[in-house]
Length: 565
Image (cartoon, rainbow, N blue to C red):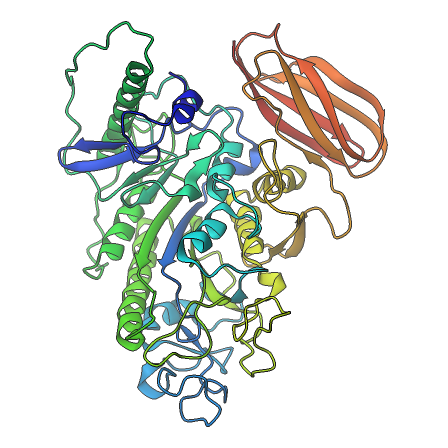
């Protein structure tokens, strides 16, 4: 049974589509469908070894008591104009001022992250992005999380996640017919089920697990034979057993290929977050380990910490969480440095929203903009953006971009610009810039499956070393050269290849084998600027992997295509 057919039928046998549990000696791993292998058709931009660790601060972290504008008269607890006479932090509740930005300090529990920040000025390991948010913000936990996970405009509802779309675009052989023994999953989430952030157009792009395995998966499992029956329930049962077998492969790879923890000098705090980051450090350090030849360790990881939903008793609850967060990240950085892999690892935090500027007594209610962190040895450590504006005339108004009384976000720090930065400067760094722009557009603006945003002018913020601020995708006011995914893909007979030209001129659109041999050229000649499309008959091609290439005076872009009969 094919994955898309399985998803359409709705799992009538009662298994949740995003959480197929497989118990391996008491250790659950959950995979939705087949995770792709890195193949010869990967775009050049994904050929680096850079890894992204995403830390979700679930519940809505209060940014003002995390990165603290302690001297602002609208914040300072002793000020007559303070919005936080009870919750405002000062004295021993905050760190010393941030060295190169002395109007700010951090929560006292964040000494570990402050130490990573160092002297700042581009020299430390912590980038603090102020006032991250988006227009027309959503203050519901579930819908707010969906917006951040799917990276859509707040009025657009989409099932796939931005990481899932990214991984699907970089791994065009998805899904392979079988998963070879020794394969790693492409992404790992620590949790009970795979979040929608990892869902691609055709299913999950990773696995979810609660902890590392302690024993190898049992072999030779015996099942009752599936009757030779066309009924839907037997097809679904066959699919679930396939997922079980694939999960066994991933579990055994993680168990047998992950290096042992041997950094005796690194001590993690005793918390769930710390333990999970310790496991991630071990998996990252497994790159190139003998015997792991079928694929590389995961490129993207996700851990979740919370809940930061501090409507009450915020002082004690947030202090505990931020202390854990800071100590865990500091230990993780020390660990990956001891493993010798720190230069290829970056951490990014996110939360579904911030909190309101004005306290409600012992806590804060759902708010809008907040600071977020990007951490790593290859980050230009500094505070990016201005301090939050807390005076009443600067807080959100009914006609502003934030609900009344809330912090306004910095348009430069629109949250998808942060994602664009991570893709452009980190995950795809070193690739062809034209191709990178097209890949970012496919993740954040539009691909063959859906439109995710009305915007196509994304900013790369120059957060990472050797990177500068630049537009990615389209320049302001320009249409931009775009080559979108063909549809349907896989192609069975006729397939449509959409593209957008930034200027009129000569155009070549060629179809190539995976070996780079051109076998067809559906478009050759002068084309007008703007949206275009070409139809291609794939019925005579053998099943397999191909790619198509658009060549114009503005640049050359290619995309993968699968043919299946």
